[in-house]
Length: 131
Image (tube, rainbow, N blue to C red):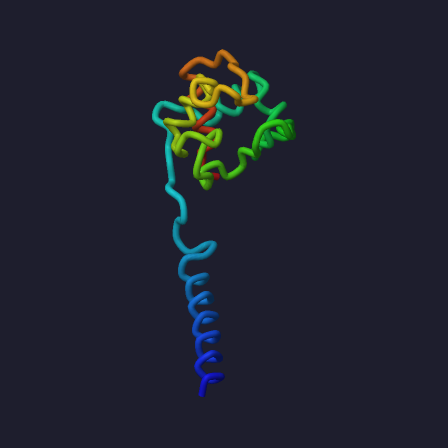
């Protein structure tokens, strides 16, 4: 009887996992919020990313030159929990981080790139775009 209960428990856990995967897994609804950046232009963001050299430190989807390994990969940034390990992830916080990363994390390797507020919004719009 004990073996039957253990066996049924295992089968039940596996079935719950399978049902969970097919109802919540890839391709079944949004797992992360879909964000937009107010007044940001993703096309300009791509240009600004290259102009300010972001691609030298980061891997960024859609930018062939972006093969850097100093900073984190910025692919699928919308699925990350934190920006720079300290700010809750959102487009507004991404803009804040780009403008002044050291005010949030003084020891960060991310330099102050002297990016304008508009350029920061455009960069965030590119990073948070929905391809």
